[in-house]
Length: 462
Ligand SMILES: Cc1cc2nc3c(=O)[nH]c(=O)nc-3n(C[C@H](O)[C@H](O)[C@H](O)COP(=O)(O)OP(=O)(O)OC[C@H]3O[C@@H](n4cnc5c(N)ncnc54)[C@H](O)[C@@H]3O)c2cc1C
Image (tube, rainbow, N blue to C red; front, side):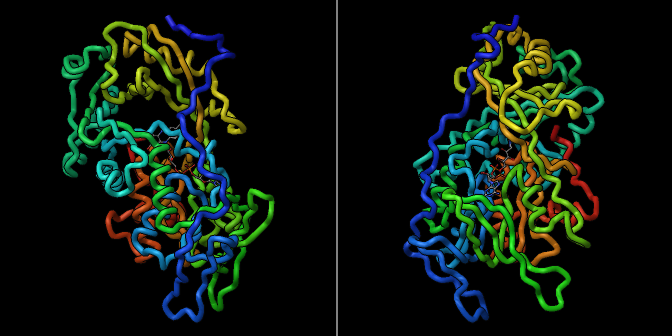
């Protein structure tokens, strides 16, 4: 039986608890020194603590997980001589994907680069205190991840685990009988094969990760500007096929319009990156600029449930994904659960209201069938957030845009981006400062694949 604690319309909305960042327009960076590009006649920088930054070396659009991670790794790498300005329109991060994420980290991907990024995420979380500080704790719970597939997807799962093992991941295949023996609270009927990993797999607090990265980036001198990027300005280059992107046009929290000139710019505006890319002529121009950035918001719900059943999943158990793609994991004394809606029932993205009927029709029947203890449960909360969906191949677009010398993109991580935050930030910092990826070669995720219609075939995403 499904028990709701309140009338449906009165169901409590639940949001991860967090405090908004201060609303200051510019952080204090009194020690910022001018940065001189090689052969540059004059300093391009005028970021000071008492003026709005009109120029900078690197402008980052969007200070969510990707933007703040890049800001941190840039400052760590290049130090005070590199002026980094992060423009963030929602300083409380009410609608950003990062704090609304479920925070799952898994090693169980089928593309090597995705596995390597998750390996680095685990390493980063383990060393968070020494790297970032102890003001916030991402609370990494490595309780494991369990994936179940039906017979027809068993071979794909086995191939994925074989690759993961080659890369040093501790994931194992479980037959139907082994699954039943190890997890007696699962009804294994219809499960062809399962994979289970319990080293460096689990979940963490995305808000704490963001808070730590942002504060550390600011402490190292990155300047956060409370404003919305609304347009770009260009300048023509002699003999070049495409104009160069030169400035971002922003509307400040005080409703003033300003420009910030940059040497390099990173677009990391999450789910809204595709729309903003058009202002940089990406998808509206000719030649290399005729291909759009296929990143758009998709609304996804998370329901918080309290299990009333006997002999159910333990609160220290793994995150579990069913053959139906319904997943759940422990969250304190409760569990959180969700799945993506079918393509023909994508909800409107006009607001972040939660559809409670979707739980009744599309989630609970699968939970109750596969995990009999969940036949009896209470929905004690819910929230919704935007997946930053790459509609082309559901993988991040990471790298420099081929039409520009100075315009970079990190967007479109499609529901598996929070675990990529450390690796993408480090990779973007390498690309921007050193001109190439040094730690993990992320070039398969470049914009070129969109132009050449070469999807990255990651099979472990739904
Ligand atoms: C419900 C849900 C569950 C998820 N679960 C997981 C999970 O378990 N594991 C996982 O790995 N990933 C998960 N994800 C995905 C993950 O949260 C995202 O991929 C990741 O957070 C993307 O980070 P981002 O920095 O690109 O985007 P965001 O966090 O959205 O940051 C982008 C920032 O850009 C700002 N911005 C946008 N436009 C402008 C503009 N014009 N000017 C200035 N600023 C602008 C926004 O305000 C925002 O703060 C989940 C996402 C959701 C919604």
